[in-house]
Length: 74
Image (cartoon, rainbow, N blue to C red; front, side, top):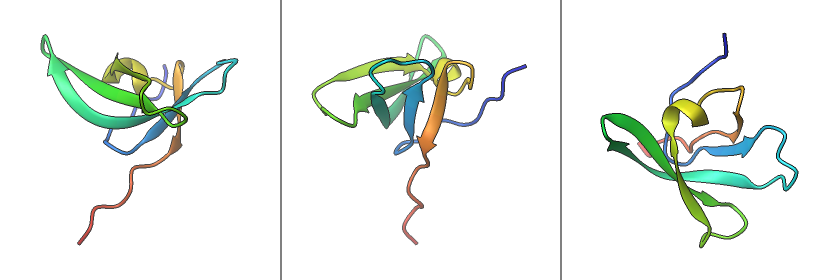
């Protein structure tokens, strides 16, 4: 069973086995057809964006988190 965690704005992920090594920052989360999704942008080019299911993004068999979300301001 693959480990999953909660997707949050500000987290940075990298696809496993990605030849390009591109990383993606979560800009916002939305619900599409009752399924949570994350809008992500490339950390190298903010003009490059995509929407991924949070279930896939949080599945450590597909993506790994390389940077946690910043702590909320108190």
